[in-house]
Length: 156
Image 1: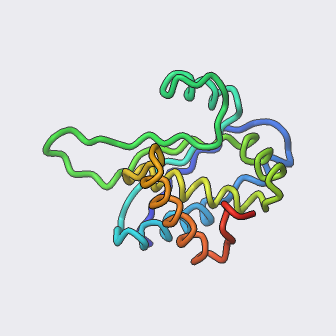
Image 2: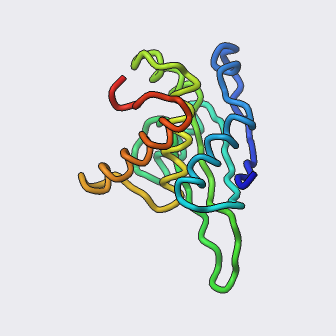
Image 3: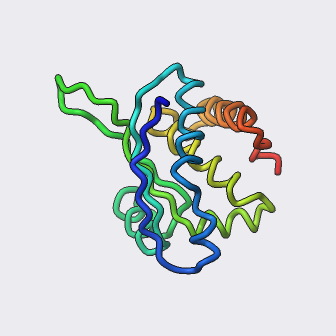
């Protein structure tokens, strides 16, 4: 396998939300799908599952948005001259993912897959600030998820 997942489960709360958090094996499968799409291997990603309080705090501090969000991406920047296969960190807010999945009539696991793929693409430098970037990123997400037998998250 090429993806190495540093799995951090920091969410404590509702048992249904806790039970829906994906396994390290699921995360590895999804990360490997992104890496295969990008022609990469042997990359490490830290994925931390949090509550709304931690998500809101980080979102406020790093993005200036004082509310919890589904996923935050923090790319790793190695010091000059240092080679590392660490892409960075994803912070995934379990209650937000569960709520959004219910609101959008999606399987919770599929929404986790989408947000994991989305977050890793951010770590790889993709963004959706302007329309052209958004179209490129969304088309990659759709293709990667289709390869995982997950329907287009933008049409559900």
